[in-house]
Length: 222
Length: 305
Image (cartoon, rainbow over all chains, first blue to last red; front, side, top):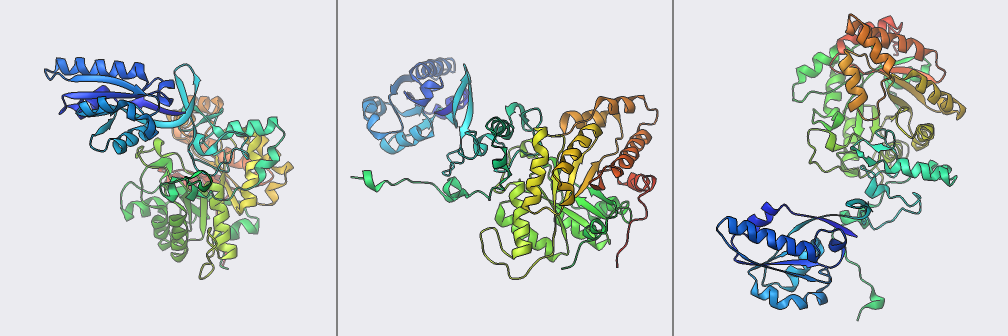
């Protein structure tokens, strides 16, 4: 899923300062599952903003609504009347949803209410980790299903580096060394010899480094 | 091909001695010259760190040229942290044009550990890719992408090994991989845990790796108990055993004890089969190097015409 973190309330307040009617728009997908931008969080954010503005003697009308999926245009139509009556929209969806809103309702500004952080998964209640960078050239078949691009701090293809100690990364004792995990799993499957191959420099052109990406599937185009 | 002094020493079979210099956080040539002057004649080559611990400092290549002007052979450290393959290969050519022959390939400490924690970590290549790239440039006159160079370059390729990082059992295999990638010589992380280093070397010998590459063992003279503790707790991939910290704590003259430990360790390293030399990292304490080298029986250094 795409994981996001709500922006500090103060930042959202600063961004909506000139506006009198605000719509907080949640999304029913990833941000609901990571408890950042679903219907519950949209309601809470709306309430918190209206209380803060009241205290600041600058009352605001804040409504909240949640669409099923902000990242696809067809799901946005259901919010039309609420979007049109608002001065500004604050989206609690990921960066994809926020951009989709700005494009679909081009006459209205939609501001980000979250910081989109990563593609990842929950590992325990309240904890999510990053697992994929979407590099466009998956190596999970070579690394026992553990991604060194996303999970190694240095995105090494020939790890681990010298900073790996007790299974932890030099960047933080809270971060597992992905290469330590890979080596352990290679040993478990008796595949350590596979690590002896010197991996060539990665082709980053399939990732964002090759420029913004677009996928075209002629077989499914209308 | 013109060989570097370090290559000549290692190939002669003499026990090599290398030093290390950390460039300043300034553009003061005289500061570099002052620190480097202590090492002249006492080491075969001087490593110049490349923004070590991700702290911005004078560039290693520029510092290396200053050392060449002083008649000291540099060993340029090059990390993959701050430059992509275009910049790295351009810098290798630039270093060669300036007369630099030894290049040590490193990954580089993560930028979040340094003084520009908001920096973008490049890591286009990894340290292994850098070794392969240098070998390809030297032996095939070809860039990573396959384009041909206009003329060959003389470089002696170094790599690092950390016998104290984990997973311990994998470390000798990683060394083998660096040799396969093209490393001519290896410099190790600072050794304090001699027992673990012995076990590492035993495995290295079983794999026959010591016959394929020159392994130079890392040493740092301790100045204080605090320095030992700091390294144990804050330097990525470093182990300082309690008995070393105890010995420093009990000593009246901490610096003298630090030097004693370093000299004893060098004496010990000289007896380990497969250790081809010692790399003395006395950054900001370069003036102690002549004493260590002399007391360890490694002075004068071999000379070649």
